[in-house]
Image (tube, rainbow, N blue to C red):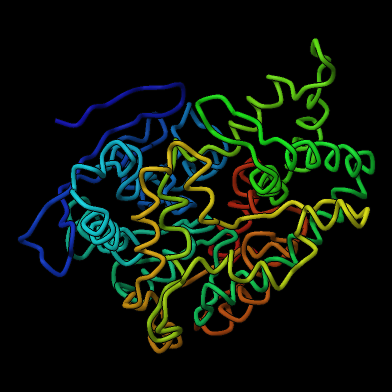
Length: 437
Protein backbone atom coordinates (compact mmCIF):
# COMPACT_ATOMS: atom_id res chain seq x y z
CA UNK A 1 0.00 0.00 0.00
CA UNK A 2 1.30 3.48 -0.89
CA UNK A 3 2.39 5.72 1.97
CA UNK A 4 0.33 8.94 2.17
CA UNK A 5 1.60 11.99 4.05
CA UNK A 6 -0.20 15.28 4.64
CA UNK A 7 1.68 18.56 4.81
CA UNK A 8 0.21 22.06 4.95
CA UNK A 9 -1.63 22.53 1.67
CA UNK A 10 -0.56 19.26 0.03
CA UNK A 11 -1.05 15.51 0.09
CA UNK A 12 1.96 13.35 -0.79
CA UNK A 13 1.74 9.75 -1.98
CA UNK A 14 4.67 7.38 -2.53
CA UNK A 15 4.83 5.23 -5.66
CA UNK A 16 7.30 2.40 -6.32
CA UNK A 17 7.71 0.80 -9.73
CA UNK A 18 9.63 -2.25 -10.89
CA UNK A 19 11.30 -1.57 -14.24
CA UNK A 20 13.82 -3.49 -16.37
CA UNK A 21 17.43 -2.49 -15.97
CA UNK A 22 17.69 -2.91 -19.74
CA UNK A 23 14.45 -2.09 -21.53
CA UNK A 24 15.67 -4.14 -24.49
CA UNK A 25 15.50 -7.17 -22.18
CA UNK A 26 12.22 -6.60 -20.29
CA UNK A 27 12.27 -10.04 -18.67
CA UNK A 28 15.78 -9.56 -17.33
CA UNK A 29 17.04 -7.87 -14.16
CA UNK A 30 14.61 -5.45 -12.55
CA UNK A 31 15.38 -2.30 -10.56
CA UNK A 32 13.15 -0.09 -8.45
CA UNK A 33 12.12 3.43 -9.39
CA UNK A 34 10.49 5.78 -6.90
CA UNK A 35 8.22 8.77 -7.50
CA UNK A 36 6.25 11.04 -5.19
CA UNK A 37 2.78 12.24 -6.16
CA UNK A 38 1.89 15.74 -4.96
CA UNK A 39 -1.63 17.12 -5.07
CA UNK A 40 -3.20 20.19 -3.49
CA UNK A 41 -5.10 19.45 -0.31
CA UNK A 42 -8.80 19.12 -1.08
CA UNK A 43 -8.13 18.05 -4.68
CA UNK A 44 -7.10 14.47 -3.94
CA UNK A 45 -10.08 13.02 -5.81
CA UNK A 46 -10.28 15.66 -8.52
CA UNK A 47 -9.77 14.70 -12.18
CA UNK A 48 -6.57 16.66 -12.61
CA UNK A 49 -4.08 16.29 -15.47
CA UNK A 50 -0.76 14.77 -14.43
CA UNK A 51 2.52 16.70 -14.66
CA UNK A 52 5.70 14.63 -14.56
CA UNK A 53 8.68 16.66 -13.34
CA UNK A 54 12.04 15.66 -14.80
CA UNK A 55 14.82 16.92 -12.55
CA UNK A 56 18.09 18.51 -13.60
CA UNK A 57 21.29 16.52 -13.42
CA UNK A 58 22.24 13.94 -14.44
CA UNK A 59 22.24 12.15 -11.13
CA UNK A 60 19.98 14.50 -9.20
CA UNK A 61 17.07 13.19 -7.20
CA UNK A 62 13.80 15.12 -7.23
CA UNK A 63 13.44 17.84 -4.62
CA UNK A 64 11.75 16.89 -1.35
CA UNK A 65 8.76 19.23 -1.05
CA UNK A 66 7.73 21.04 2.08
CA UNK A 67 4.18 22.14 1.45
CA UNK A 68 3.54 24.24 -1.65
CA UNK A 69 7.09 25.53 -1.92
CA UNK A 70 8.86 27.00 -4.97
CA UNK A 71 7.28 26.31 -8.38
CA UNK A 72 4.99 23.62 -6.91
CA UNK A 73 2.63 26.30 -5.62
CA UNK A 74 1.85 27.34 -9.19
CA UNK A 75 1.85 23.82 -10.63
CA UNK A 76 -0.66 22.53 -8.08
CA UNK A 77 -3.25 25.03 -9.26
CA UNK A 78 -3.58 23.04 -12.50
CA UNK A 79 -1.95 19.65 -12.06
CA UNK A 80 -1.36 16.53 -10.05
CA UNK A 81 2.44 16.52 -9.94
CA UNK A 82 4.74 13.49 -9.98
CA UNK A 83 8.29 14.05 -8.73
CA UNK A 84 10.55 11.34 -10.14
CA UNK A 85 13.79 10.11 -8.62
CA UNK A 86 15.43 9.15 -11.90
CA UNK A 87 17.01 5.70 -11.86
CA UNK A 88 20.12 5.54 -9.72
CA UNK A 89 19.17 8.56 -7.59
CA UNK A 90 17.37 9.10 -4.31
CA UNK A 91 15.16 6.10 -3.54
CA UNK A 92 15.43 4.64 -7.05
CA UNK A 93 17.97 1.81 -6.61
CA UNK A 94 20.77 4.29 -5.87
CA UNK A 95 24.09 3.97 -7.69
CA UNK A 96 26.98 5.16 -5.51
CA UNK A 97 30.45 4.14 -4.35
CA UNK A 98 28.66 2.10 -1.65
CA UNK A 99 26.29 0.20 -3.94
CA UNK A 100 28.12 -0.17 -7.25
CA UNK A 101 30.85 -2.56 -5.99
CA UNK A 102 28.13 -5.21 -5.61
CA UNK A 103 27.99 -5.28 -9.42
CA UNK A 104 31.54 -6.66 -9.53
CA UNK A 105 34.40 -5.30 -11.64
CA UNK A 106 34.70 -1.77 -12.98
CA UNK A 107 33.73 -3.15 -16.40
CA UNK A 108 30.54 -4.64 -14.93
CA UNK A 109 29.76 -1.37 -13.18
CA UNK A 110 30.25 0.60 -16.40
CA UNK A 111 27.99 -1.79 -18.31
CA UNK A 112 25.34 -1.41 -15.60
CA UNK A 113 25.54 2.40 -15.71
CA UNK A 114 25.27 2.43 -19.48
CA UNK A 115 21.54 1.92 -18.87
CA UNK A 116 21.12 5.12 -16.82
CA UNK A 117 20.88 7.75 -19.54
CA UNK A 118 17.87 9.69 -20.81
CA UNK A 119 16.59 6.91 -23.07
CA UNK A 120 16.21 4.56 -20.09
CA UNK A 121 14.68 7.31 -17.94
CA UNK A 122 12.06 7.94 -20.62
CA UNK A 123 11.21 4.26 -20.92
CA UNK A 124 10.85 4.09 -17.13
CA UNK A 125 8.44 7.00 -17.32
CA UNK A 126 6.38 5.31 -20.00
CA UNK A 127 5.92 2.21 -17.82
CA UNK A 128 4.89 4.47 -14.95
CA UNK A 129 2.44 6.40 -17.15
CA UNK A 130 0.68 3.26 -18.26
CA UNK A 131 0.38 2.00 -14.69
CA UNK A 132 -0.96 5.30 -13.36
CA UNK A 133 -3.02 6.59 -16.28
CA UNK A 134 -3.69 3.52 -18.44
CA UNK A 135 -2.48 2.88 -21.96
CA UNK A 136 -4.50 5.74 -23.45
CA UNK A 137 -3.76 8.30 -20.74
CA UNK A 138 -1.36 11.15 -21.53
CA UNK A 139 0.50 13.43 -19.20
CA UNK A 140 2.36 16.70 -19.31
CA UNK A 141 6.10 17.08 -18.79
CA UNK A 142 8.09 19.75 -17.00
CA UNK A 143 11.80 19.40 -17.70
CA UNK A 144 14.45 21.47 -15.95
CA UNK A 145 18.00 21.53 -17.39
CA UNK A 146 18.99 17.87 -17.94
CA UNK A 147 15.30 17.12 -17.41
CA UNK A 148 14.69 19.25 -20.49
CA UNK A 149 17.16 17.09 -22.40
CA UNK A 150 15.05 14.13 -21.30
CA UNK A 151 11.89 15.76 -22.68
CA UNK A 152 13.52 15.90 -26.12
CA UNK A 153 14.30 12.21 -25.82
CA UNK A 154 10.70 11.59 -24.73
CA UNK A 155 9.39 13.50 -27.76
CA UNK A 156 11.71 11.38 -29.92
CA UNK A 157 10.85 7.96 -28.47
CA UNK A 158 7.29 8.13 -27.13
CA UNK A 159 5.41 11.30 -28.10
CA UNK A 160 2.11 9.40 -27.96
CA UNK A 161 2.28 9.53 -24.15
CA UNK A 162 2.40 13.33 -23.99
CA UNK A 163 -0.25 16.05 -23.96
CA UNK A 164 2.17 19.01 -23.62
CA UNK A 165 5.79 19.73 -22.70
CA UNK A 166 7.21 22.61 -20.67
CA UNK A 167 10.98 23.13 -20.62
CA UNK A 168 13.11 25.47 -18.51
CA UNK A 169 16.75 25.90 -19.49
CA UNK A 170 16.96 22.47 -21.08
CA UNK A 171 16.96 22.54 -24.88
CA UNK A 172 20.03 20.50 -25.77
CA UNK A 173 21.89 20.69 -29.05
CA UNK A 174 20.54 17.77 -31.05
CA UNK A 175 23.78 17.31 -33.00
CA UNK A 176 26.33 18.63 -30.49
CA UNK A 177 29.12 16.31 -29.37
CA UNK A 178 30.65 16.51 -25.92
CA UNK A 179 33.62 18.39 -27.38
CA UNK A 180 31.26 20.84 -29.11
CA UNK A 181 29.46 21.46 -25.82
CA UNK A 182 32.61 22.33 -23.90
CA UNK A 183 34.19 24.31 -26.71
CA UNK A 184 31.14 26.57 -26.53
CA UNK A 185 31.03 26.49 -22.71
CA UNK A 186 34.47 27.84 -21.81
CA UNK A 187 33.87 31.30 -23.36
CA UNK A 188 30.50 31.54 -21.58
CA UNK A 189 32.19 30.71 -18.28
CA UNK A 190 34.88 33.30 -18.96
CA UNK A 191 32.14 35.92 -19.39
CA UNK A 192 30.60 34.90 -16.07
CA UNK A 193 34.02 35.33 -14.46
CA UNK A 194 34.32 38.81 -15.94
CA UNK A 195 30.88 39.72 -14.63
CA UNK A 196 31.74 38.39 -11.17
CA UNK A 197 35.00 40.33 -10.96
CA UNK A 198 33.25 43.48 -12.21
CA UNK A 199 30.70 43.08 -9.40
CA UNK A 200 33.31 42.21 -6.77
CA UNK A 201 36.68 43.63 -7.94
CA UNK A 202 38.26 42.86 -4.57
CA UNK A 203 37.80 39.16 -5.34
CA UNK A 204 40.50 39.31 -8.01
CA UNK A 205 43.20 39.55 -5.37
CA UNK A 206 41.32 37.31 -2.92
CA UNK A 207 41.17 34.48 -5.47
CA UNK A 208 44.78 34.95 -6.52
CA UNK A 209 45.88 34.72 -2.88
CA UNK A 210 44.01 31.44 -2.30
CA UNK A 211 45.22 29.99 -5.61
CA UNK A 212 48.83 30.87 -4.85
CA UNK A 213 48.55 29.21 -1.45
CA UNK A 214 47.03 26.04 -2.93
CA UNK A 215 49.67 25.79 -5.63
CA UNK A 216 52.26 25.59 -2.88
CA UNK A 217 50.27 23.28 -0.60
CA UNK A 218 46.85 21.73 -1.38
CA UNK A 219 44.52 21.80 1.62
CA UNK A 220 42.67 18.93 3.25
CA UNK A 221 38.90 19.26 3.21
CA UNK A 222 36.40 17.83 5.69
CA UNK A 223 35.63 14.21 4.87
CA UNK A 224 39.07 13.56 3.38
CA UNK A 225 38.77 15.58 0.18
CA UNK A 226 41.68 17.53 -1.23
CA UNK A 227 41.48 21.17 -2.27
CA UNK A 228 43.86 21.70 -5.17
CA UNK A 229 43.99 24.81 -7.34
CA UNK A 230 41.90 23.08 -10.00
CA UNK A 231 39.34 21.98 -7.42
CA UNK A 232 39.19 25.57 -6.13
CA UNK A 233 38.60 26.83 -9.67
CA UNK A 234 35.69 24.41 -10.08
CA UNK A 235 33.72 26.51 -7.58
CA UNK A 236 32.80 28.46 -10.71
CA UNK A 237 29.90 26.06 -11.09
CA UNK A 238 28.18 28.50 -8.72
CA UNK A 239 28.39 31.37 -11.20
CA UNK A 240 25.56 30.01 -13.33
CA UNK A 241 22.85 30.46 -10.70
CA UNK A 242 21.00 33.65 -9.91
CA UNK A 243 22.77 34.37 -6.62
CA UNK A 244 25.87 32.26 -7.23
CA UNK A 245 28.23 35.19 -7.69
CA UNK A 246 27.15 36.66 -4.37
CA UNK A 247 27.50 33.34 -2.57
CA UNK A 248 30.96 32.82 -4.01
CA UNK A 249 31.99 36.27 -2.81
CA UNK A 250 30.73 35.56 0.71
CA UNK A 251 32.58 32.25 0.71
CA UNK A 252 35.81 34.06 -0.17
CA UNK A 253 35.24 36.59 2.60
CA UNK A 254 35.79 33.81 5.13
CA UNK A 255 38.88 32.33 3.48
CA UNK A 256 41.51 33.27 6.10
CA UNK A 257 42.01 33.35 9.84
CA UNK A 258 45.16 34.07 11.79
CA UNK A 259 46.69 30.90 13.21
CA UNK A 260 49.64 30.41 15.50
CA UNK A 261 52.15 30.73 12.67
CA UNK A 262 50.24 33.22 10.54
CA UNK A 263 47.25 33.23 8.16
CA UNK A 264 45.64 29.86 7.41
CA UNK A 265 42.61 28.82 5.39
CA UNK A 266 39.71 28.84 7.82
CA UNK A 267 37.62 25.83 8.76
CA UNK A 268 34.56 27.89 7.85
CA UNK A 269 35.89 28.37 4.32
CA UNK A 270 37.01 24.78 3.90
CA UNK A 271 33.66 23.43 5.13
CA UNK A 272 31.83 25.74 2.74
CA UNK A 273 34.04 24.69 -0.15
CA UNK A 274 33.49 21.01 0.63
CA UNK A 275 29.74 21.48 0.64
CA UNK A 276 30.00 22.84 -2.92
CA UNK A 277 32.57 20.40 -4.31
CA UNK A 278 31.62 17.01 -2.89
CA UNK A 279 29.64 14.65 -5.12
CA UNK A 280 28.61 12.46 -2.17
CA UNK A 281 24.92 13.36 -2.64
CA UNK A 282 24.94 12.82 -6.40
CA UNK A 283 27.92 10.86 -7.75
CA UNK A 284 26.17 10.03 -11.01
CA UNK A 285 26.39 13.70 -11.93
CA UNK A 286 30.15 13.23 -12.25
CA UNK A 287 30.21 9.63 -13.48
CA UNK A 288 27.63 10.08 -16.26
CA UNK A 289 28.01 13.76 -17.05
CA UNK A 290 29.73 13.56 -20.42
CA UNK A 291 27.81 10.46 -21.46
CA UNK A 292 24.63 12.55 -21.77
CA UNK A 293 26.17 13.97 -24.96
CA UNK A 294 27.21 10.61 -26.42
CA UNK A 295 25.43 9.74 -29.68
CA UNK A 296 27.08 7.46 -32.19
CA UNK A 297 25.59 9.18 -35.24
CA UNK A 298 26.94 12.54 -34.04
CA UNK A 299 30.41 11.41 -32.96
CA UNK A 300 31.27 7.70 -33.25
CA UNK A 301 34.28 8.14 -30.98
CA UNK A 302 34.36 8.24 -27.17
CA UNK A 303 33.43 11.34 -25.19
CA UNK A 304 36.96 10.90 -23.86
CA UNK A 305 36.95 13.38 -20.95
CA UNK A 306 36.03 16.12 -23.41
CA UNK A 307 36.08 18.96 -20.87
CA UNK A 308 39.70 18.13 -20.02
CA UNK A 309 40.73 17.70 -23.65
CA UNK A 310 39.15 20.97 -24.77
CA UNK A 311 40.47 22.98 -21.81
CA UNK A 312 43.93 23.27 -23.38
CA UNK A 313 42.36 25.41 -26.12
CA UNK A 314 41.58 28.03 -23.46
CA UNK A 315 44.90 28.85 -21.71
CA UNK A 316 43.27 31.70 -19.80
CA UNK A 317 41.96 29.01 -17.41
CA UNK A 318 45.52 28.02 -16.43
CA UNK A 319 45.78 29.28 -12.85
CA UNK A 320 49.55 29.03 -12.61
CA UNK A 321 50.01 31.07 -15.78
CA UNK A 322 47.48 33.66 -14.57
CA UNK A 323 49.45 34.08 -11.35
CA UNK A 324 52.67 34.51 -13.31
CA UNK A 325 51.08 37.04 -15.66
CA UNK A 326 49.33 39.00 -12.90
CA UNK A 327 45.96 38.15 -14.44
CA UNK A 328 42.74 37.17 -12.68
CA UNK A 329 42.46 33.46 -11.91
CA UNK A 330 39.41 32.17 -13.75
CA UNK A 331 36.93 29.72 -12.27
CA UNK A 332 35.66 26.85 -14.42
CA UNK A 333 31.99 25.87 -14.75
CA UNK A 334 29.91 22.76 -15.37
CA UNK A 335 32.88 20.62 -16.34
CA UNK A 336 33.81 17.20 -15.01
CA UNK A 337 37.51 16.33 -15.00
CA UNK A 338 39.26 13.01 -14.37
CA UNK A 339 41.24 14.45 -11.43
CA UNK A 340 37.95 14.88 -9.54
CA UNK A 341 37.97 11.11 -9.10
CA UNK A 342 41.18 11.51 -7.12
CA UNK A 343 40.33 14.52 -4.92
CA UNK A 344 36.77 13.51 -3.93
CA UNK A 345 36.39 10.45 -1.67
CA UNK A 346 32.85 9.89 -3.00
CA UNK A 347 34.30 9.40 -6.49
CA UNK A 348 37.65 7.70 -5.89
CA UNK A 349 36.29 4.12 -5.97
CA UNK A 350 34.56 4.91 -9.28
CA UNK A 351 37.57 6.22 -11.21
CA UNK A 352 38.11 3.12 -13.34
CA UNK A 353 34.37 2.86 -14.00
CA UNK A 354 34.28 6.48 -15.12
CA UNK A 355 37.29 5.92 -17.39
CA UNK A 356 35.53 3.02 -19.08
CA UNK A 357 32.41 5.10 -19.66
CA UNK A 358 34.54 7.94 -21.05
CA UNK A 359 36.05 5.45 -23.49
CA UNK A 360 32.78 3.94 -24.67
CA UNK A 361 32.05 4.38 -28.39
CA UNK A 362 28.63 2.79 -28.90
CA UNK A 363 26.24 5.20 -27.22
CA UNK A 364 22.81 4.99 -28.87
CA UNK A 365 21.31 8.20 -30.22
CA UNK A 366 19.11 10.08 -27.76
CA UNK A 367 17.20 12.26 -30.23
CA UNK A 368 15.36 11.54 -33.47
CA UNK A 369 15.54 14.74 -35.57
CA UNK A 370 13.05 13.41 -38.13
CA UNK A 371 10.48 12.66 -35.41
CA UNK A 372 11.05 16.05 -33.79
CA UNK A 373 10.68 17.80 -37.16
CA UNK A 374 7.22 16.24 -37.46
CA UNK A 375 6.30 16.79 -33.80
CA UNK A 376 2.63 17.33 -32.94
CA UNK A 377 2.94 17.72 -29.15
CA UNK A 378 2.72 21.34 -27.92
CA UNK A 379 6.12 22.39 -26.52
CA UNK A 380 6.88 25.62 -24.66
CA UNK A 381 10.40 26.45 -23.53
CA UNK A 382 12.10 29.13 -21.48
CA UNK A 383 15.56 29.89 -22.87
CA UNK A 384 17.79 31.95 -20.60
CA UNK A 385 19.78 34.41 -22.68
CA UNK A 386 22.81 34.38 -20.35
CA UNK A 387 22.64 30.69 -19.42
CA UNK A 388 26.08 29.44 -18.36
CA UNK A 389 25.14 25.77 -18.45
CA UNK A 390 23.21 25.31 -21.71
CA UNK A 391 24.33 27.11 -24.85
CA UNK A 392 21.70 29.60 -26.01
CA UNK A 393 22.61 29.15 -29.68
CA UNK A 394 22.16 25.38 -29.36
CA UNK A 395 18.82 25.90 -27.60
CA UNK A 396 17.47 28.20 -30.31
CA UNK A 397 18.66 25.89 -33.09
CA UNK A 398 16.86 23.01 -31.38
CA UNK A 399 13.74 25.14 -31.00
CA UNK A 400 13.77 25.68 -34.76
CA UNK A 401 14.22 21.93 -35.33
CA UNK A 402 11.22 20.87 -33.24
CA UNK A 403 7.96 21.47 -35.05
CA UNK A 404 5.63 23.80 -33.19
CA UNK A 405 8.01 24.58 -30.31
CA UNK A 406 7.52 28.08 -28.92
CA UNK A 407 10.26 29.81 -26.94
CA UNK A 408 10.38 32.58 -24.38
CA UNK A 409 13.89 34.03 -24.40
CA UNK A 410 14.66 36.04 -21.28
CA UNK A 411 17.59 37.50 -19.34
CA UNK A 412 15.44 38.13 -16.28
CA UNK A 413 16.46 34.77 -14.82
CA UNK A 414 19.51 32.56 -14.80
CA UNK A 415 19.51 28.78 -15.30
CA UNK A 416 17.79 28.22 -11.94
CA UNK A 417 14.87 30.48 -12.81
CA UNK A 418 12.29 27.72 -12.26
CA UNK A 419 13.43 27.31 -8.65
CA UNK A 420 14.00 30.93 -7.66
CA UNK A 421 11.28 32.81 -9.52
CA UNK A 422 8.50 31.93 -7.11
CA UNK A 423 6.53 30.21 -9.86
CA UNK A 424 6.80 33.12 -12.34
CA UNK A 425 8.72 31.14 -14.95
CA UNK A 426 6.27 28.24 -14.78
CA UNK A 427 3.30 30.61 -14.86
CA UNK A 428 4.66 32.16 -18.05
CA UNK A 429 4.99 28.78 -19.75
CA UNK A 430 1.53 27.67 -18.63
CA UNK A 431 0.17 30.95 -19.95
CA UNK A 432 1.79 30.24 -23.32
CA UNK A 433 0.33 26.74 -23.31
CA UNK A 434 -3.15 28.03 -22.56
CA UNK A 435 -2.95 30.69 -25.26
CA UNK A 436 -2.89 33.59 -22.82
CA UNK A 437 0.52 34.83 -23.98
